[in-house]
Structures are given as structure tokens and as C-alpha cells.
Length: 378
Image (cartoon, rainbow, N blue to C red; front, side):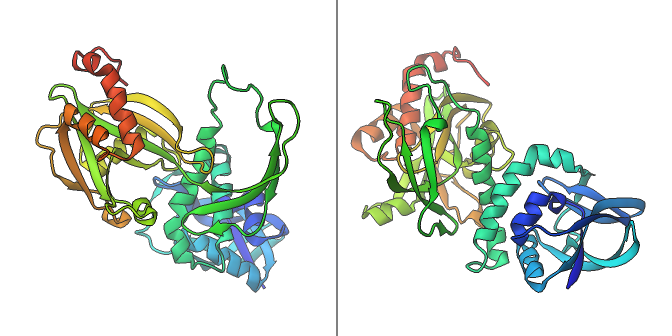
């Protein structure tokens, strides 16, 4: 049996219960000569030795080997490990263990950490991502889940963005209260991607309930799309890369022309993601980002949601560049073509990624004003 001291996100009892699979008994405790800081640029804290400081936390006594294994699996995704310490409780000092970063080089301390601030900004995202982590226990090693963790957070963050909603002036004004979601059925697929088999019924337009439906939904991400456009040269930048969808459809040409695109990371705005992805994939800074449209890719079976932009920029000398991130196995070639050529590629079908065609046509409808500098910039 083990006694562990928690100073960070696992002080949030719903998260601790999710990881352990049961509600443990806890008591307040402190760790002298230590302080808790945000891990710089991250959504979680780290503890560091600091003379005279006191780290507030919770002591959990009598954790079993099964509990330790669950905690090791969850914390392994953050590159943390247990080390022995002595903590102070209302009943006196006692030995315990604490999760410290595996390496001092992995994370750097940022501002002092606050549990309340974390709950306000990251609590919901962390709970949803933690569920994805623990769902994969037994199927994936902790180090494998560590590589998936940013995508779990991105999926969770998409729900926060979705909560903003959209107008309902023409479509039905009712909402989720007219959907009787009856939960998961069968065994969900939990890998890098996620597929949820579910059962539900909904209230039809005639007011009656539908028959129960059994379907599957691909749980995806919110994605930022950017079409770089140079209104002076009247050219656009297209990217080309190999894609899995055409391979599995039987398409003999799996290299696809697309807009710059990428997952919106947890905590990012769509605009921030759009600018970041344009640098990563095309090595390009845009001087203005114009919101084009946003919406679902295919709402019948996937949660994937697009935030599409046109990025005004200088495309001089940008043709045939290779970009992308090695750690994401990206191999991306850029093509700078005249706008008329881009329209021809839509007509011939060589551009067969509809988001790209959509953005090119968005520019076509505003081309004269864009070239005259009369379209609003953000």
C-alpha cells in the first residue's frame, strides 16, 4: 500500500476518481521547501524545490498496487515519475511519494499555479482528455498515449468551441432537448482516432419521436483552413501531400491539392491555429487573415468542423517549396499558381478537395474588391 501527495490537477477529486476508478479518502497536506508552477506553455503544473516555500495539496493513504498502476499510466503521458518525500498533515509528518517531472529539461516552470484558474480554463478539457487516456489503458503503452495526448485535448477543446453555437433563424429553433441520446452501444473504437457507436431517437418535425437509431460517429477535431492569396500578383498557394482517404477509396492518385490546414490545438483560437499552420506547412506569414466561412465537413457521420480563412500575403518566390513538420510525418509541397489556373484545376477535377474549391470560389466572388483593397481585414 502507498501514500501519495497530489499538488496539481489530481487535487481535483473528479479527475482523481476518473483515473483511479473509485473515490479515495483524502486529507489536506503540505510539502515544505517546494512550490508549484504552471509548466511553461502547458495546461498542467509542475513542482520544483524552492527553499522556504510550501506546496499545498492532498494526501491519499493506502493506495493499492492497482491504484499505483493506474496513476503511473496516466502520469506517464506527462513524463512524470514518483519520488519519495516527507509531507506535513494535521496529524504530523509522514512519508509519501510525489510525481515529479522525469527530466528538468522536459518542462520549464512558468507562473505560480492556481487550482481555481486551472479549473476555470482547463478543467473540462482535462477531464475529457483524461477519459480518452484511461480508455486506452490495456491497449496502448503510456508512451504511446503520450503521443496521442495533444489530439485528445484538441478533441476536448473542440467541444468548448462548439458551445458557442450558431444562429437559428431559418433552421429549427429547438436544441439538444429534442434528442434522446441513449448512450454508447457495443464496443467503441479507441485508437489515434475515435469512433463512437451510439443509440438515439429524436423529435421529428411532426412532433413525434423517431424510431431508435443505431449508428456510429467519427469523433474528429476542429480544423483551421487557410488559402494564401496574393492580390497584387493575383495568385494563390496550394499545398500537395499524400492522403490516406484516396488510397482506401481506390483512387489511383493519392497526392491531393489542398488548402493549408491543421488541427486547432487546445487553448488556441481558430485564427491562431490558421497563422501557425501557414508557417508550418508553407513557411509563410500572412499579413491579413479574412474569415471566409465555418461549418461541418460532413455532419451526418463526423464531428469534424472547419474554420476557413483566406490569408492575404506576398507569394513572390514561394513556388515549389517543401514544408511540414517531421514529427508529424508531413511531406508537403507548395504550388503558387495564377488564380485563373486554380479555377481551371477546379473545372478539370484535379482539385478534388472540396474545402480548397470552396475557398477558391470565395475569393472568386470577391476578387475585384480584394485586388482593390476593399475587403475588410482582421
